[in-house]
Length: 142
Length: 142
View (tube, each protein chain N blue to C red):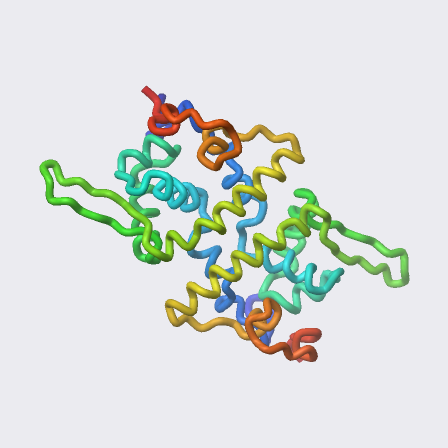
């Protein structure tokens, strides 16, 4: 059978493939970094993400909602004045760490091979460069 | 500084982050499967991809070209009649295997947790289901 010029493989349903699930769940520009960022912080507030990443508030809001809905992060509201909202990883989110580390490692090695410039702050976070704790805790623009 | 409403973090350049490199290099729906497919086959001909994946010839051509240009696969032309063209993995492509396996593993476990349907042919390829060699060698529609 053909659908829009594409042959259907009757023995393989790509929609049900774990690769497709992984791609749909977190292969966008921000989800890796958001999950990794929360893992480093323990708990992260909304404003910290917008300071760390070149992301708009609108896109950040949508992305965080998707990650909550996929069960990878949790939104915690503390009834203080003003209300404090923090994001933490769920168990499923924590289980992504070995995968994210391997992704970073593969990307890092390949970029070295190709002699591409690698961001030094990310290298510190991932243990590929000597750590500057002050900069890592507060890597924000003035 | 602000660019289009997005704050710039002067200490972190996302463009130079290995995550961003990984995402740009192969986070699309097909690249995982194409690389994994070549790894299983050893060498793969163009038509085999279109039979395995619900992909159009146009998108397949572009995707293969990008993978060649990123140095992950190699296009081999054999001067036979008719000319035979096969794709194989480069060393950099081979180096992706542990990452792809971990991605599949994470996706598979998470889909199980969420009680989602998982494609059985992919499970055979990845060793999560008893292998049916005849089906695996020729999983094509009639």
